[in-house]
Length: 177
Image 1 (tube, rainbow, N blue to C red):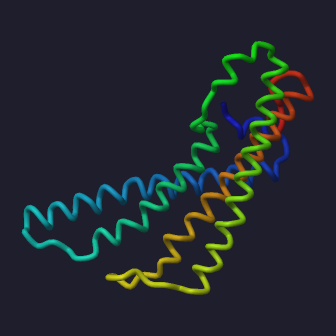
Image 2: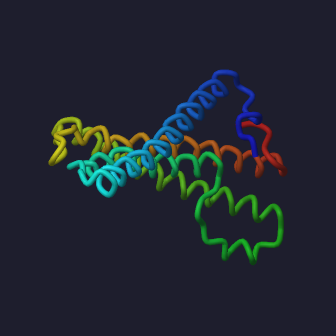
């Protein structure tokens, strides 16, 4: 499902497109960076017999970003982990649409709540400006991934909710986000 093609408003379409490009760039970058750092450490440790201190600490930064961007990609592509027990018992299309609406409302409520708490942590981390133990890198750069990831997840969950409400209102697959 291509969500970008369903958006009619050019401003929202541009914002959505920019967010997707940034998300994919960061996601691909950290997915390339993490294995490169691990391979570098393996070569140093087992081939050259000269382990680099702090490389595990260095890995924390891209790994946190990889997890959070991965979560936002799952939200964007609507590939959430979910328990579909109730969907086995819902037979009518209209009832399924309403159920998806309620599910999206609940997901949005949780996402907004997590966004609130991650913003608090983001501002706390910025104010405290703690440093990593060995490398003395600002932990803010790793911890800010929580807020960025939850903001993206909330945005994509809101788009999903709008689509589901559109399905309920129009009685078919929504045309506009």
